[in-house]
View 1 (cartoon, helix red, strand yellow):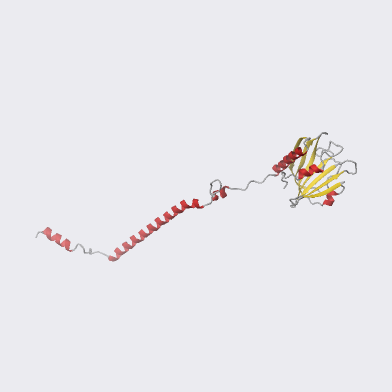
View 2 (cartoon, one colour):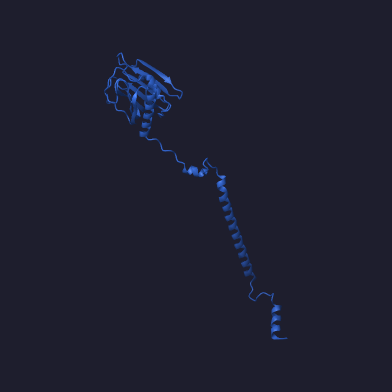
Length: 251
């Protein structure tokens, strides 16, 4: 038997024996480490897959608006419309009043509104004194017009006013209340100041909120204090049409 054959025989005899420095505890620790690493990798993979599925399914679960946008996006992008400025409100009401007056009295020309924010200061000379208690005006101004006699105007105010029917009608030759369907009340009054002709026609609409709208027609032009005429250019029936026009959003 040669030396090579003896060496191969000895290797075959011990091939399944562990090495002399074999540590079974170290082997078990390596096995446990590999198992823990494998479980961690599996858990990460499962979590990643769940996140991917949820991200794909979530848009289909959210309600959509009429334009096909997500409701959540619509809520984020939606903002309340800006409130109307006092100048814009006064201009809008003046334009609507002028439009209604022109339709109600088609013989008038050059009808337009000139309203602005703030209180009206009584600086014009009139044959009839202004009411003793003024409006805490949100806006005030004039509704300009030209009739067969010439140019004149109506005085317009909107704001808060504390008054009673008795005080409003004091000195009037005719006065009446007209309840409205929305709960507001319209009071019509006409004055002659002791003369044979009307010197002032006035209508006020009082809302339940305390807001009031007032339109006055004088026997002169209140915007200039001149242009005295025999009687008022516009009577209470037309003034009531203006102050109750549903197209005019007073409040």
